[in-house]
Image (cartoon, rainbow, N blue to C red; front, side, top):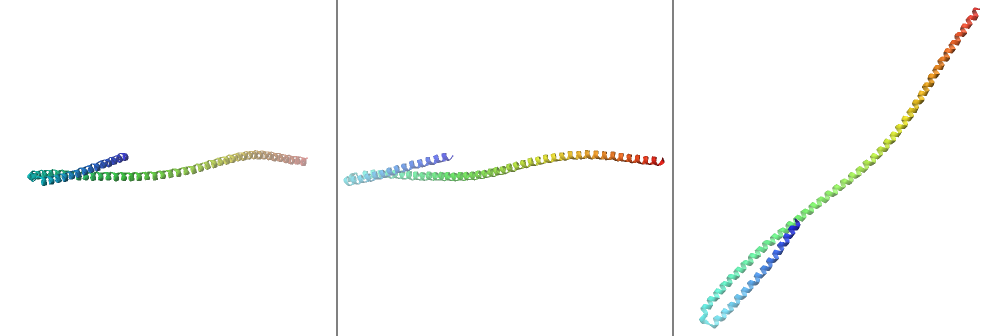
Length: 206
C-alpha cells in the first residue's frame, strides 16, 4: 500500500513538472505574440508615415491585427492562469498525498513500536515462566529426594519393627517355657512335700 502511494506521489510530481514545462512554453508563446504585435505595430507606423492614402486600410488592418493579437494574448493568459491553477491544485493533491503517506508511516511506526513493546512483554513473561518452572522443577526434585529419604527411613523402621517383633516373640516363647518349667517345678516340689508329710505320718503311726 505504501509503495502504491509513493508511486502515485511520484506520478503527481512528474505531472507537476510537465505542467511547469507547459506553462513555460505558453509564457514563451505569449512573449512571441507580444513581440509580433510590437513588430506589426512598428510596421503599421512605418506604413502610415510612408503612404497616407492607404492610412484608412492600414489602420483597419492594424486594428484587426491588434484585435486578433489581443484575443490571442488574452487566450494564452487565460490558458496560462488555468494551467497554473491546475498545477496548484495538483501540487495541493501531491502535498495531501505526501501528508497522508507521512501519517500512515507514523501510524505504522506506532503500531510497530506497540508490537515490539508487546513482544518484549511476552518475552519477559516467558522468561518469568521459565524461571518459575525451573524453581518448580528444583522443588519437585527436592521433594522426590525427601520422599525417597522418608521411604528409606520408613523401610528401616519397618525392618527394626520386624526385628523387635521377632525378639518379642522369642521373649514370649522363653517366658512361656519358663512359666511351664516353674509350674512343673512347683508341682514336683508340692508332690515331694506331700510325700514327705505322708512318710512322716507313717513313721509316727509305727
